[in-house]
Amino acid sequence: MDNELEKNQVQPQETEENKENALYDEIDKRIQKQFENYLKTNEQLDNANKLVEAKLKEIKDLENTFKQREQELLNKIATLEQNQQFVNIHQEKPVVEDANSHFLKFFN
Image (cartoon, rainbow, N blue to C red; front, side, top):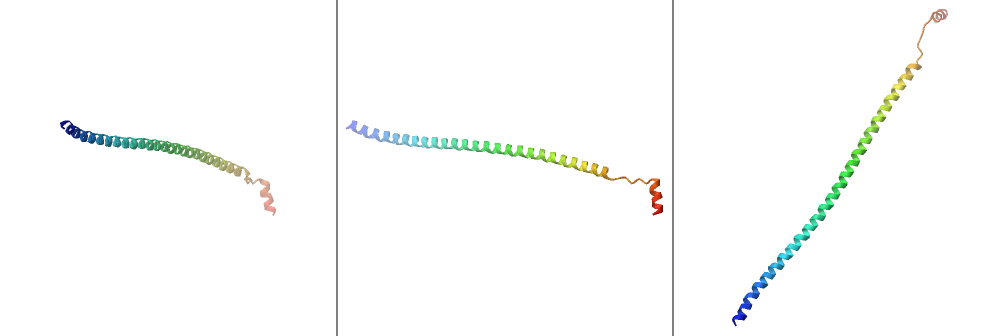
């Protein structure tokens, strides 16, 4: 009878420990799953950040190219304006009054 009593006392304690261990195992599994999800999410965010950084660099490169081309066009416009002024100056005929022109005016 003593032996049976000991069994009854030991078994509930072992069963309780088994339940606790099972609970801890379940908690560990959930924590591990959450950690794996965190790692996946973190990796996805890292990849998204890399894509954003690449796009920002691409935009900056395009902006720099645009600024360079804009400056080139402004330089060409300035050169064309200078050339036009040069042409205008040389197309104007200077008025030279010589003795004959005075003589002709006098008789007209």
